[in-house]
Every structure is written in C-alpha cells, then in structure tokens.
Image (cartoon, one colour):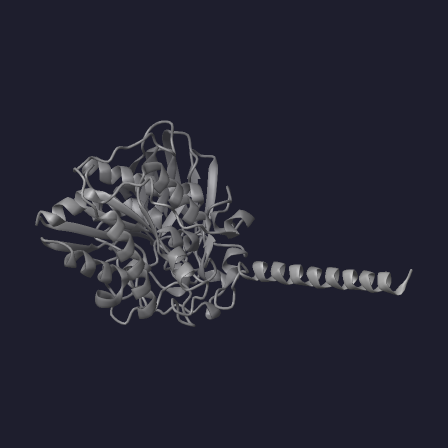
Length: 459
C-alpha cells in the first residue's frame, strides 16, 4: 500500500471514530433529558410495600390540617400508602410506575374539544357566571404566599372577571391531599348542587400520590362529568393537568387516564405542567422551590395562570348555546355509574361509638360527613349490605390499627393503619359482581379508626 492510500485510510478511520463519539454523545444527551429526577422526590414511596389508608398525600401535606410544607427529602415510604393490588391484604399492596408511564408527555390538542361558548355567552350578555374549582392543593394554591391572590385559581378568576360584562363568582371546592376517589364521592354535594356554569377539574397528580389505579381514575372522572351534565348539560368543563418534579415532562398514568376521558367527551384540556415544561425548556427552577416537589411558588403559579389565560383566550368564543352530548360510557357497558355515600353511623354496628368527625384542630372534616364511627371494643364489628360492584370508605385509620373487610363471607381484605393517618379516601373492592353484597368489618385488638361513610358505586 502506497503512502497516499495509507493516509486516506487513516483519515477514514479517524472520521468514523469522531462520528461514533458524536452519536454516543447525542444519545446520552437525549436519555438525560428524560432521566428521572429523584433528588427532591422520595421514589421509595412507589417501590416499597404500601399500607392502605394513611397516605400523607402530596408528599407531606396533611388533608386534615393542611399546614405542613412539602419536603420530599424527609419523607419515608410509610407516608404514602395505598391499597390497590392485594386481594387478601389491602395493607400490603404496591404502586409502581410502569415503563410506559415514563414516556414523554405531548401537549394535548384542543382541536376536537368543545369551546366554552356557553360560559362566554353569559359573560358577554352581562349575566352572572358561577365558576367552580375542583381539585387538590395545587388548585387551592398551597405554597403561594397568599392563596387568595397568587394561586393559579385566584389569578384565573381575576382574568375571567376582567373579560366579563357581568358578575363572576368563584367557588373554591378544592381539598388538599385528596384525589379523584374522594372527589367523586363529594362531587354532587360540592359541585353539581352549586349549579356552576364552568368547572375546572384537577385531580390527576393527586391520584398518583393516592395510588389510585388508572382505571379507577377514569371511572371517577367519568362519574363527575356525567353527574354534572345530568344536572346541567350546558355547564362547561375544563380538565386541568399539573405536574411534579418526578414526572416533569412525562405522561404519568393518571395524566393519561384523564386525557383519555376528556378526549372521549370532547372536553378541553389545559396541561399546565406540560406547557410549563415547554416554556421553561425542561427546567423547573421557575416553577417549584427546592423544598417542594409539587406545589409551585408564586412565580410558578403565575406561570400556570398565564398558560390558563392563553388557553381561555382560545376557548372563550362566541357560538350558539348548546347542550353537551354524552357518548356511551367508556367504563361500563351497563351505562353510567351511580354513587352512594352510606353514612357509617347508619349501618348496623356493635362496639363502635358515634362522634362528630373532626380533624386534629377540632374543625369538621367535611359537611357531607358530619359523623364517624370509632371502635370502643377489641371485638367491634360493622355489618352492612349494598348493591353495586365497588366498595370503599371515607375515614382515617391510625397506626397499629387493623381492619378486616369480608364481602359475602369469602372475599377478604386486611386494612392496616400507619403512623401517618391523614389519608381519608380508601377504595377497597373494584371488581365485584353487580349484585347485592353483605360486608362485615372487624377490628384486630385495640384500634383507633374513624369511619365516616362507605362509598358504593354501581356500574
């Protein structure tokens, strides 16, 4: 081989090496852009054995008190417990992110969604408009220096008032630390009965913390939509999606579940978390503080509100008033679900005392659930019957307390309390036959539990 040929060969080899290094570098960069950020988020809560009942939802915020700041670096796996997978032990099931849940999110298109024309018409005609915000603590504005001024909710209401010729009334029906299960249970009481014109629904991120399955998340949201349209088919809905540090830029399971339901009904979606990710180019410094992985700062809430305002400019347009049509249920072949709250003090009980249901500050938990049952005997029992195919309960179960639920004398779930008893929504059985069932609830030894109601759905 002569000298010229050798030089050409060496140059070709060098070029191949440089190209390979460049490809590897690009591949590494692409992977890093979707790497799970666990620096401020305790992922052990999704990997370890989980005990049903006493989840401190939203990484430390207690539903009863709503006073603790979220600091994921100090939370352990005991603080987020759920009860979904185990047939015989509700207290030892686990919630895991599957691989497809860590897929990059795509901002949902509103091309095929309806416009908020019913609301717009009333606003431009000078009529009064009633707006309900329904969700968790991000909708409440937890983390803002003043929730009544700087939350995305408050800023959105301010915008609506600025473009309306009539009165805009805000109803804040958000409950921190709760997901769509409690949301569905209280929807008729807190939303439909208020006869709203416009409803913002935001529960997807809390369903992650509560360990609510994607299918149950869908069912809960569909129930809310059907319940509202049955009360007022002219009421407009906006599905709101937010994010946290661990799922920043990703489509988590309940995010996808809520998108699927919204798409099925043609309801507009405003993806605050996804839009924030794009506007901040994947950097969440302008959204969250160092010590909180889900609740925005004032700056973050303003960004959420700006995104919502841009969406509302697109959605609030003139068109003839029209009823929203309901397609066939995407959950059940038997039609839309009905939901019943069975007040616990109304069921047959022995060894239980009746109390006003209050949190540690002495305030009532919720006006829908004024009373609760608390066991006063190591042999306390509850007996009830219901017709439906799902069962759960509203209440709290504290550490060292074990409740055993037996359906029809055979199916059993053991529910174990933990040190953190702030979680109040507890789905138990999701796949029963749609018939009449009997349930027995027993306590194991000394037990500190408060059961306010049993939630039954029939699909």
